[in-house]
View (tube, rainbow, N blue to C red):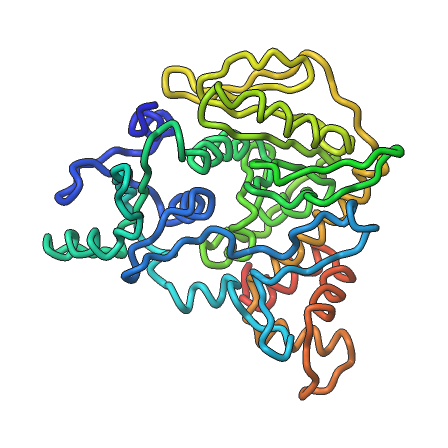
Length: 385
C-alpha cells in the first residue's frame, strides 16, 4: 500500500514539510476523525494526545444483557465516591485542548524500526521546534510493517467510504464477548472492528444538518458538534429511514482471511446485522456467499456485496435500535457544559441543588428524553439559529 496515494485518492492534499519531507494536510474536523479512529497523537505535550476512545458510554449491547443498560465510564467518569464527573465531553475537551478544534493539521508518517520504542513523541516535537514550527499543527502517524499493524488505518479508510453514504460509523464497536443463549445455542461473539448504522431517528439529525443521505459522521464526533459548528436548523422533508446495521472484520493481509470469516460467522449467528464484510486490502474475493468484502485496488477502497442475504431477527433489531438511540443521546449530551447537564438532571429528577448525581441519573435522563429534545436543549443553550 502506498499511504500517500491512498490519502491523495481520498482528496487530501499532500504538501512539502520542512521537517518530514511530506505531510497530509487536513482540516481540524477531518484530523479529529483520523485521530479518533487510528489513535494517532496530536503533539500537544511530550506524550501526545489521541482522541480515540474518549466517547465510550456502553461496552455491552443491551440485547446481550437482558435488555439492560450497563454504563461504562469514558465520555463521563466516576470519582472515588462513584459520583458522575466530566471526563471527555466536547466542552471539556475544547477547554483543555483548544488547538485541536482550529486550524489545519499536518499528518506526518514515521516508520518505526523493528525493535524501536514507540514513545517517540518528545523526539519528534524537538525536531519541529528546532525548525521553529508549532508542534500543535502536527499529528503523528507512526507504524511498523505496513502489513502487520495498520488495522486502525484500514478502519479509517472504511469510515471514509461509509461516511459518504450517510451512516454513523464506529470502530471497535460494543457487541458481546461473553456467552449468549440464542435459539438453544450458547454463542460467543467478540468486538467487531467496524460498525456502520442507520436508524429511524436519523431524520431528526437530518433536520439539524448533522446527517443527510450522503453525509455520515463518526460517533466519536457527536459530543463535539458544537466545537466544529456542525449544528444548524434547516428545513428538511421527512425521510423514511429504518434500522440498518453493518459489521466488518479488518485484517491487514489475505493470510488472515479464515480468522475474519470465523469472526463474522459468530456475529451473524445472532441475526442482528444486515450486512457483514471482510475488510482486507489484498482480498478481492473472500469465497463466501454471505459476507461481502472490502479491498484496496490501485490505492482506492472498494466494496463487493455478498451474493446472498443473511438472516435477521426484527425483534433483536428493535432492541438494538433502542440501545443505539440511547448511545446517540448520551453522546449528544456531551455538547453541554457539565454544570448545565447536572442542572438539567437535577431538575428532571426534582433533586435539590446539593444532591449527588450518579451514572444511573444520567442514563435515566437520556432514556426519558428524545433525540429532538436533546438537540433543542443544545441549540437553546448555545443560542444557535
